[in-house]
Amino acid sequence: MSTPVISTRGLTRTFTARTGPVHAVRGIDLSVAPGEILGLLGPNGAGKTTTLRMLTTLLPPTGGEAEIAGHDLRRDPAGVRRRIGYVAQSGGLDPACPVGEELVTQGRLHRLPRAQARERAAELAADLDLTGLMERPTAALSGGQRRRVEIALGLVNRPDVLFLDEPTTGLDPAARADLWDLVRRVRDERGTTVFLTTHYLDEADALADRVVIVDGGTIVAEGSPAELKERYAGDPAAGLQDAFLAITGRGAVTENAPIAI
Image 1 (cartoon, rainbow, N blue to C red):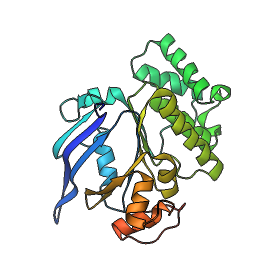
Image 2 (cartoon, helix red, strand yellow; image 1 turned 180 degrees about the vertical axis):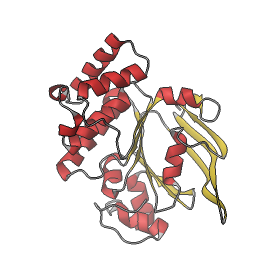
Image 3 (cartoon, rainbow, N blue to C red; image 1 turned 90 degrees about the horizontal axis):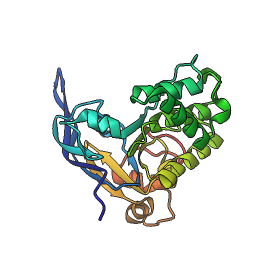
Image 4 (tube, rainbow, N blue to C red; image 1 turned 120 degrees about the vertical axis):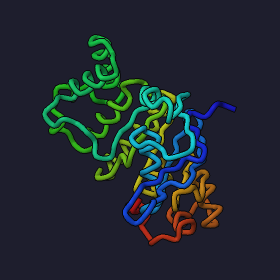
C-alpha cells in the first residue's frame, strides 16, 4: 500500500472569541493517497474552510499532527509549501499583467532561473491550452480562461498536491465542464493528487474518487460518491444531495446549486 501524500491525526483548530473558545475543527483524521481526487464537503460552519487553510499552511493548527508530501505541517511549513499548489476561490491575477508574464513571475517566485521559468511557462501553456493567450492581459480573459491560468500558476512548481478551493464558482456550464476535464487531466497525466472543495454536489459526484463530509468540526462520513449514495440514500444512482442531506440534516438544495459551506 502506498504512503499517503496527506495524513492528519487529531488535527484541531480553536479560535478565541469574546464569548469563549470556538472549536472550529475538533479532530480530523484523514489519509489521502497519491493520485487521488478527494472532495471535501460540509454545511456552513462545519470546519471545511478552516481545515483547508490549515493544510495549505495559511492557518496554524491548534493541535494534532499532519504530514503533507513528506513534510510535517507544524515543524516544516516551508517544506509543505514547496510541494503543494494552491488555487484560491477568489484568484489573484494582476488584471494588467499578460498571461505569460504571470507564469514566468510565478516560476521566479519558486526560485527557477529566468530561462527555466520561461520554459516552464511555455510547457504549462501548451498543456493547459493557453498558448494563444500568453500576450493577453488577464483582465481580457473569460472566467474559464482565468481559472485555467490560475491552475497553471498552481502547477508551476510541479506539486505533489494541488489544492483547489471552489474552482468553478461563477463559471457557466460549458466552462465548468472544461475545468472538470482539466482537473482529470492534471491527475491522469501528471499523477497529481487533487484536494478539492466545492459548492456543487454534482461537481463532487463527477470528479471525486472519494468524498469526505465534515460537520461540527469532525468527519461524519466518507467514501466514494456511489458508496455514500448507496449507504445513506439507498441507491447508488441517487443524487449526492440525497446522501448529503441524510448525513447532515441541512436544508434542501438542487443538485447543481451551491450549498452554503
